[in-house]
Image 1 (spheres, rainbow, N blue to C red):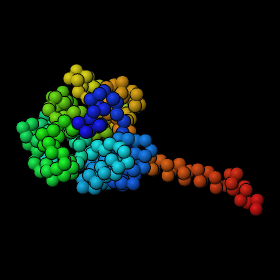
Image 2 (cartoon, helix red, strand yellow):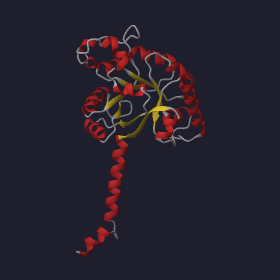
Image 3 (cartoon, helix red, strand yellow):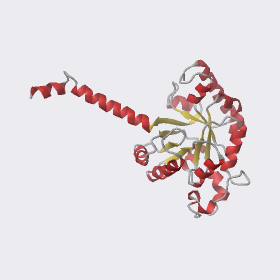
Image 4 (cartoon, one colour):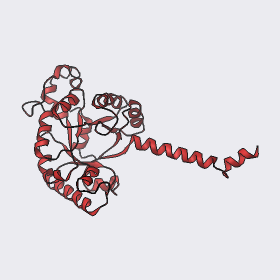
Length: 267
């Protein structure tokens, strides 16, 4: 196994990550160098389309980090292309049924485990053929997460998590809240009850869970609730907050009556 991130999860470590939504390789480099050794490249809601997102994996790896790719959809073509181009840790959004999850796993695994299309000797994932047994061993290296972000998925969570090839169920609380008519009401009792149902089901079936930071719970609280993978800040939010803070400090310094304003007018 060369997927260090998957090994860390299998060893029981709680993994934290940040989002990359700008689609910028420079931002990937900055975020990893700032200490976020795991980043999620978001090709569902982020600025980067799939091809550019796949290119960002190189920037993350060059900086010494581990990249997870959230693909825009779970189609066979999308998954095949992502895997061939070197994504080995993947999040698939909006997986609501066992049948959907089975099709996703099938697309990600070579025969006889699945039906992934074969081009192993010429793809980046096999180092262009240098990994000679890639087709026989790629399943060991794949970290596949599917998102539970709709109320329809909740009754099927245990069955989805038990499918061969699926390593984690990732809970998306924002879309989950929207699916029950409570968009952005992350502290609503009905949503909290639904999340508790998910967490109880996962514990009973020994399914690994991931989610995002928020909903009134900290990293440690989410960890203690059973989440082994937690995605925190996004690059967009970090940049926006820093820009707002810098501007506020500038305005405070130059506003009438400030110390800087007084000194300026004294000359």
